[in-house]
Length: 158
Image (cartoon, rainbow, N blue to C red; front, side, top):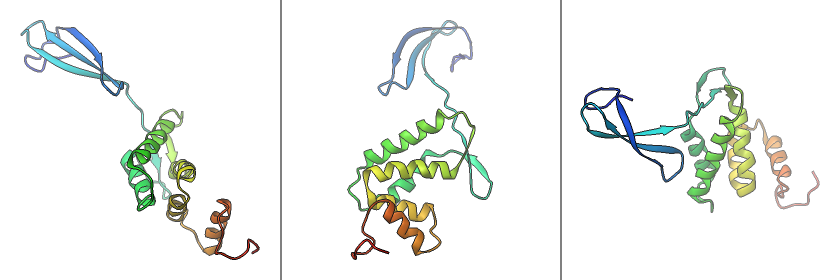
């Protein structure tokens, strides 16, 4: 580790602690050359996958996009921001443990739908309507039937 003051690589660790989140180690160091102190952080290197879009383009996974999509689906619903953040964290963690370095957008969308279905059916249907881009009303109706929601107030017969 280079000293930020004199660029010497000769230093010693004088204190190590976990950060509050427990996701990094904070190390206090002392340069053996100039004797100044500095702080470094050590984190596990996360390998976020590349996202393969429907048109074949690839781009780095962006947790913020997942949060934005979930927030749009949960708009004006009784879903706390903390719950949306927790879902995004679960999805990010699930993607990081996968062995494949590329993941299709459909897999990310399915993970979002699976979690939204458990917390809010309206948010689930909103997300599904954008994510699945229903071709017609029948596809939409099938999604509602899968949720076991009434399809319009009449009896359940088609």
